Length: 130
Image 1 (cartoon, rainbow, N blue to C red):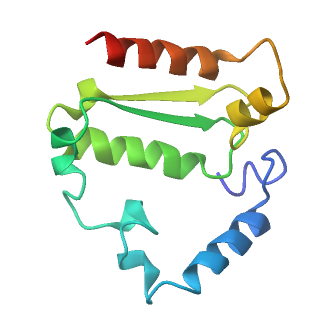
Image 2: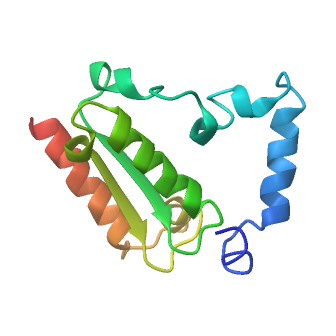
Image 3: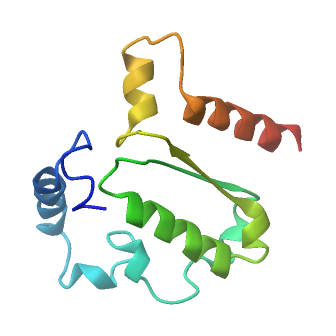
């Protein structure tokens, strides 16, 4: 989605590269082997034990986010590696949303929040109700 969303996201691909370069400068090379830096390239079954730490996972992203492929990729990894993952992982993709859309809207004091905000509130309600 870096190409298709390069002119839509609030952070450009060059901005993401700048931030990544700042982190990579302090990480042993090659960074792709570090699950914290590149979770999609982490060893198989990295996410398998997550069900021992959490009962549910919520992933959010924006339709116009450059990182959208990574967002959906993490969902696929969690669903396939966590026991019962398909029932424990939920994803909300904000229509026409950009990176951190909900945070920006909240910070700007918008009274009417988008569907991602409502989805997060609903998800939290389910988690704390069980």
